[in-house]
Image (cartoon, rainbow, N blue to C red):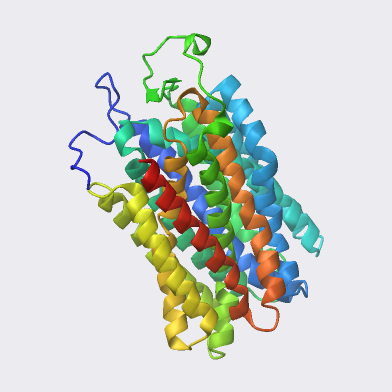
Amino acid sequence: MKNTNKQSLVAAPNGKSYLIPFILITSLFLLWGFAHGLLDVLNKHFQGAFTMTKAESGLVQFSTYIAYFLMALPAGAFMKRYGYKKGIILGLLLFAGGAFAFIPAAFLHSAVPFLIALFVIACGLCILETAANPYSTILGPAESAAQRLNLSQSFNGLGWILGPLVGGLLIFGASEDDIFALAKPYILVGGIVLFVALLFILTKLPEIKTVAGFSDETVDKPLHEVATQKSIWKHRQFVRAVVAQFCYCAAQTGIFSFFINYVTEMNSHISNIEASRILAFGGMALFMIGRLAGSFTMKWMYPNRLLALFSLASIVCMSLVVASLGTVSLYALYLSFFFMSVMFPTIFALGLEGMGIYTKKASSYIVMGVAGGAFSPILMGYIGETNMAIGFIVPLVAFAYIFYFSIKCGKAR
């Protein structure tokens, strides 16, 4: 067990507070959580609006998460040259541009323009995540990095609640002749994103330089003078973190994408809009509570131990979901949101441990692991075309690897 850290979570080594930068960075987690939450409504809506199979509707997630694979390294290179702040502003502008692209897409009556707009949004989200995740970990003491990132990610959970709630209301609740049904939630979020971009332009943010694993904006030692470190790929925990993040995003995206399908198949009396509300207030609320609980628990428990406990619980939940035991399986599905909540930020923070001058580059590779979300919905949709429960074997296997990763982190520690 860890001793409670009484030092401020957002204190700089020179005594300066990083509170304002931390608040701004945390707002980004809320925004991209909202964008991702909308995808789960789109997945089900596309099946009806464009006559798609479950596997074909997985293209909604594919067009989004494949952007992470393609953009992660360019995003890291951009920030290495221009810094975190300019990277964040670029990500926000791409986010807003893709959101407003839903307006012309609404006139074309085809899924393709919407998928292209989602790809542009995801390019912006990839840049934001590549910047905000490591930035959150280094805005304070190194020993509380995972706790700080989980706190930021808690607001990401709030975005996941608002996404299906607003999306379900505006999309499932719209009349059949409303061609702007799909565009309305994106017009709303696009305007908010532009406002946040303006705040970042007008606010001075500290540019953190990382030397030998410690963050200090006062450090002025050139990176080429830092002692030579081993290759990034010889850091075994980092490599396992990339794989674990791929598995986690595959599991999370698949569960979120086919939640509405699973619930409506298990209980035919539940409508799509009712299922989207259950997703928001049931699943996503538990997801946010889990993030907050995880951040608090890490004050006295090592992150890898909490990850091991939660991944084991997730394995049990997915086993019950696959077994199709009626109400028991439905509650297991809801509960899985709580247990998977801490996985992304915890894997991210554990993967960056000891990376020193390679922190930005390592962050890019871990973000590339988000590409797991591009493939799992298609695979799950194909496996579960006639029985959605069988498709949940995919996240079951993914959680098993994450459990292995957490055990290996414990041995390394």
